[in-house]
Length: 255
Image 1 (cartoon, rainbow, N blue to C red):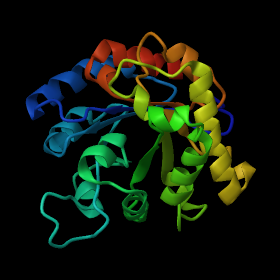
Image 2 (cartoon, one colour):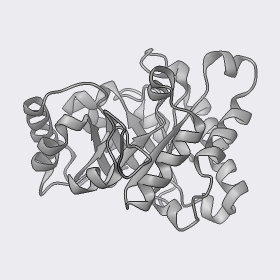
Image 3 (cartoon, helix red, strand yellow):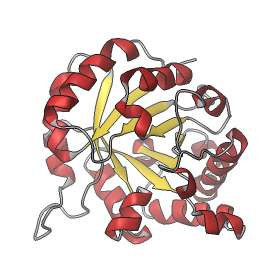
């Protein structure tokens, strides 16, 4: 991490886990463990847990995010939630373009861009996910794909709006598989993302953008990962469902 130019962010992505009651209990367990962290701490929770999460996090350093947002303000989009709805509920962050959304729910680079614009225009901080499959990596397309996805996601995003953008490099082959990219692979992937941003906005601007690593970062490998210059924290899956493990990752990013 380079804390001289950008903020480290540890964001939990709960996916489809926890009821409102379980949300309250887990956040209450986490609060004393992450208090005083020298990084931003975010929990991105299912829609039904947002109210409970916002209430439980009051008075703490934990910020609440959602796991998706629609690109329209309103309309006939059954099952979707708008950026205005999220901000009205006290949400400050939102995950966009996670590989599971792309794989299971038809998310495309174009809709990722539209959702990103909707989020930042509403004042939300967008955590935009990019990443390659194992086949794409083995064919040598990692750099090309990461730069393409990053540039597509940031199309029509102004340099000023970049202040509300976090990019999370999530190698698809390392999400939910227990397989983690090496620290060097994570740093390389994050570096490709930063290079893409530099090609769009200039190197100085790119140095201010937080780029997370999101492929199975956990309590055991967090120190090594966040020690890399281009890894500005992480988007945490399974480990964010365990208060102690999550706090260890937060502490690693606070050093």
